[in-house]
Image 1 (cartoon, rainbow, N blue to C red):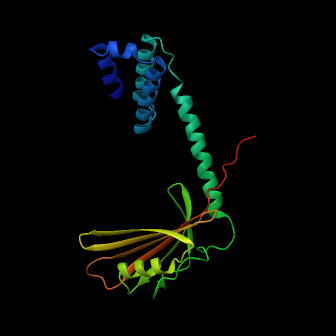
Image 2 (image 1 turned 90 degrees about the horizontal axis):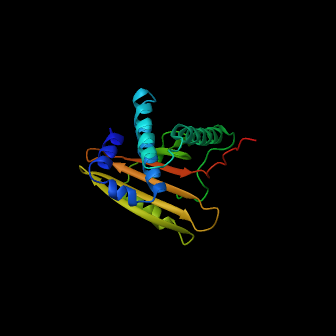
Image 3 (image 1 turned 30 degrees about the horizontal axis):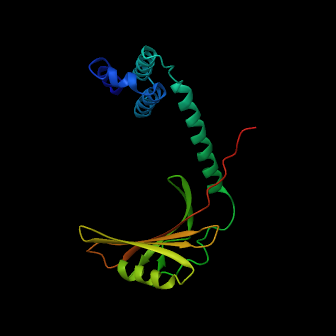
Length: 209
């Protein structure tokens, strides 16, 4: 176990280095190690043993071990609040559409209407479809359409001859908006698969009274 290895280092040659370190830093290191272990496994007896070992090691060098479980509970509570805020934003009524300034995709055939979806830690507006133009041609079209009011960046990728172009467009004024074009075509295909996404502003996390 990670904590056991750390203790072995302490008892087999690194005691001088540890004693010379700031004790608060040592305690923080043990806290991080124990936290990572808790995150990597189910909260069972092994986890409790790992935390106890870290606490005992900290005690031997005169450092009070933080309450790891309490800290993790607080983190979990914050994550739960953030997820609840995202879910509320996802379910909020109102039109679901990309920003009005989003460039048109030439010869675009939509798979259906735009939708909202939670992606990582944000809610995105997503529109998917196809176009007979190549990824490079679609990327060129978007770059040409951005005008002088948008910033842009581009990424051209090729994996096993599957071409993918990403175009990122950003507004220069606040609040900043972003749209992303992802255009992909495999070598055997005659159409390009297109995904356009735009993240919604981060929702405010409701604080408990």
